[in-house]
Image (cartoon, rainbow, N blue to C red; front, side, top):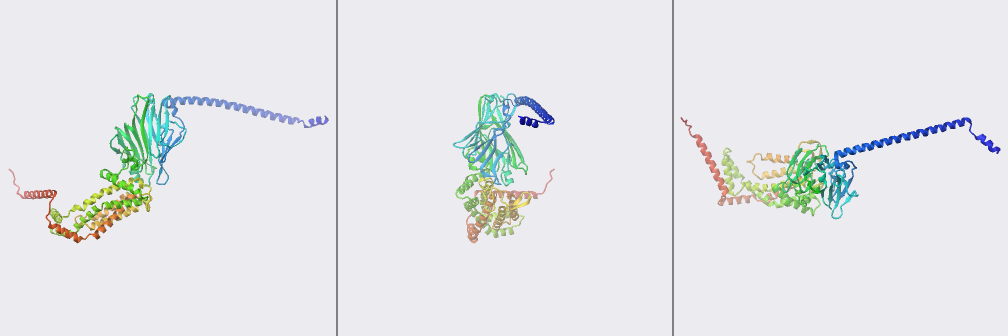
Length: 620
């Protein structure tokens, strides 16, 4: 007990320690009191903030209701992307606007080998514009649609896959976009269903405006060619296909007639909106973008679509095309879309459709190298034209062996009597059975082939990114030297195929001029060099496949002429002409009429001279 009492006395705190401990307890009490007060103040402020937010939300909700009416709940939301994918494309559909957000073509690449995206981003506008019954202006492109699926990535399997995007407009009223994608198809079904929208949309609107805008991104290496072939095309209902000017910096067309489709077209790819029935009207325009922009042109289409105001359910059937400008692919849809691949007009288009494209496709079934395909195609065309080429050469040979007689006529008849000299030369040709047009006509008949190729190669998607020799892409220009500056009209590079084409053209024309009498055409030598130089400047930025074809054609022509020259005996030709001169000349009706006209002209000239020699008599 003594020990316990002593320990308690020894271990008890002193007065100073008791005072210090009291001060610590007082300090802790004050801190707790301040923390409780602070927590109470924070709680009060939070309650005030929640009340303010509630008031603001109510005000905001009222503002949205006043501005958008039945669409107020669709104004705000979070943008999500739903992907639809088949073997050839990926289509991303945004909940904002329910619109196609981007399209990737899986079987193609850009010129830099990156994925080929037809369009991408929020710059795209795709939606209806209309007024509600309370005169509110609505643009569906900025409203949020509700996807009727929990799947964010839809892979096409079976016959087709469908995505429905719904825009609510109050209770039991909505607008929905239905996208239908099929396997291996570039065409996507696009139906717009209006359910009880006649209660929302103003009753006086028989047509709804559909606003479609997008920027066309650069896809190809040759910006000049891409700009030239990028434009806006449209088709009148069951009639012709037209387009806005491709060469202008901007163009616009207001159409008050029915249309079957509207297509924004690049050089090798297009995206189009096709009507299930027809569009009521359209306001179409484009504007060229700056040279340093990653876009070529901006397209705008405001399309009028019929709306049945008296029906609770109304459907606007349409289709969307996102794909290549491939002639046979476009033709299979039977909508006239194959006209997007411009193959020329009239006879030029016919040659491409029925000769060049089938031949090109047939050769492609056996050969992978498009450079070899072009070589074989050139050989086949030249063989088919061989009779005309031979006839042209023989006509030139006949005229060449008669050159001594023509020189004698030119010496005998002075230049002042040009008509008499011409008549004498024509009489010589007639006597020997030679037609001056015999050499020109076969060559003229070959020109449609040359023009057909001029249209075919720059628009042939088969040549896109196909390499041959030093050319990395036969659809655009080849370059062996990139210049540090730009030469007007020529460009900033040197195309070897174009150089070879120019050299072979000059050589071919020089050989031809040596076989033909050009004494009556003193400007022929100048033209022989001027035309190839102009082609060198003009075609330097064109398709390498085109200049390669022209070069091959020139080389084959040179070889043919050399073979003809070695195999034809001009002495025998001259002997045959003398034999022809011994035969009686049978004049055609055209020749008889021509001689009669010449005689009448000479008689009138002589009468005028005689009238001029009579003395002048003054009348009283």
